[in-house]
Each structure stands twice: as C-alpha cells, then as structure tokens.
Length: 236
Image (tube, rainbow, N blue to C red; front, side, top):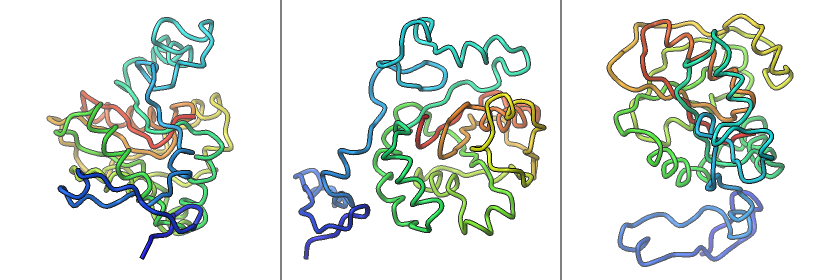
C-alpha cells in the first residue's frame, strides 16, 4: 500500500535506494513535489547568523558577515553573546505555511518532514558533545498550543536536552519590530544551575532578528556558560 504525503495528502511512490534498504531507513514522508518545495540553506551563508548570502546585495554585507550581524557585533551589550546561528531552511512562503500548520493548527506529525534535514545540518555545524537548550513557551502559550515546537525539534537530535529556561508571558514576538524586541526586558529566567563544561546550543523554530536567541544566550552567559550558539529550523 502506497503512503500519503504528510503535506498534500496525495498518494505517492516513495523513492527507496539500496542504502535505504541496507540501513532499514524509513522512506520520505513527503512526495517529491512537496520535498522540492522546501528551500534548504546550502549555499554561502553569513558566518554569524547563517543567513543565505547568494541573493544579498554586497552593500548589505561585509565579506561573509551580513549587516544585521555587524550591528550586533558593534553593540557592546550584545557583542559575543551568541557564537553563531545555523538554520536548515529559508523561511519563505512555503515554509511559513508549513510551520503555521505545524505550530498553530495542530498538525504535529509534520515534524517528521524535518527530521532528516535537521539531523544532517546540525551534525555538520555542531559537536556531538553539545547540550540542547530549547527556547521555552510561557505556561499560557504552552496551554494554548499543546506542545513546545523548540523542544520537539530538539528531540529529533537524540542529544541531551536541558530544560533550564523559563519564559514570562508577553505579546507574541512576531508582532514586534527589531527595536521593540531589543528594548524589552529579558523574558527568560533560569530554573536550575548550569553545566558549564559542555557547549550549549539554543534550539528554536525561526530566526528572524536574532533577538530571542540572544536574550536566551545572554541569560546563559550570565550564569557562566562560555560556549553558546543557536540552531533554528528556518532563517527569515
């Protein structure tokens, strides 16, 4: 019996290679058309935030660093707080719709469509010794949504997860400008002491301005962490 694509729900013939058969790897849960609609970040990127540089005008970058990250580097309050960010997909119209279905419309099974790419990209950029720190939801937002998308992504990676952060309930970050995000108080608090000997990787779904992951990183740095990066599903 042929499977149905998780996104378009059409019946399709999965592509299976000899490698898949030998390793008992599961076939793709998406049809070829839906899989091709995902824009992987696989070209030149900003060395700081992982932003694709191939379509970015040279006036908006300095070498391999985009202007947004130069602003972070030139701000004494935020310089060096986050070692780097890496992301899997471009946050284009297709990915906006997919993530919206996953986060807000209860289609949790869609996370399987991300598994292979998330694991592959993470292992390329980060150490297997990393400890994962998911961005938390407030209690109110968790009750509303039913799951924490950042923790769900972290669970794909089969690495230690440290639920060390708590978050105050505020207006959704997507409604705020970059300036508003930077001006607000740090919404994150530590729930427990921090293991300092391991590299920490903050996990979130979308990197937009970088303010959320930097606020979290700052709190971890204040607790004594010396190596803090972030990894997100998509980069706006």
